[in-house]
Image 1 (tube, rainbow, N blue to C red):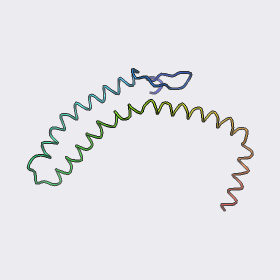
Image 2: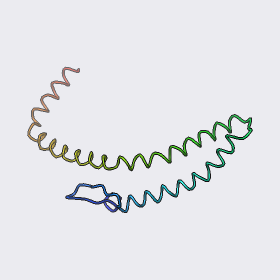
Image 3: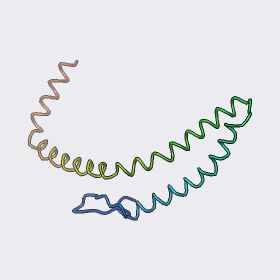
Image 4: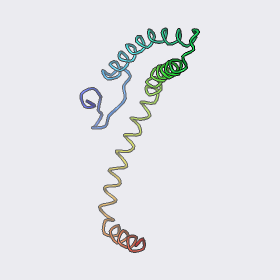
Length: 121
């Protein structure tokens, strides 16, 4: 799915605000907000009404909390999305560097692992 909807520069994913995946996620979030809006009216009516049923009151409060969280989390993720893509790029560079270094140091690493294993036992 990432390769279909995202943009790659030299094999590395890049973030674009008007990408098809971003437009899809915004439209999906708007649809969920519309459904949440209509459900919130019923939830608030139950919470603010004269209802002595504690169990119903508790479940409606939890439902309201989940609606609020589901409205806020995608927006916060969209704000952090460029940072996440930057992190993936740095991680890819680290993996290449680690692979180059580990191929040169592999015999020493095996010896250190064996010594650590004997010390642990």
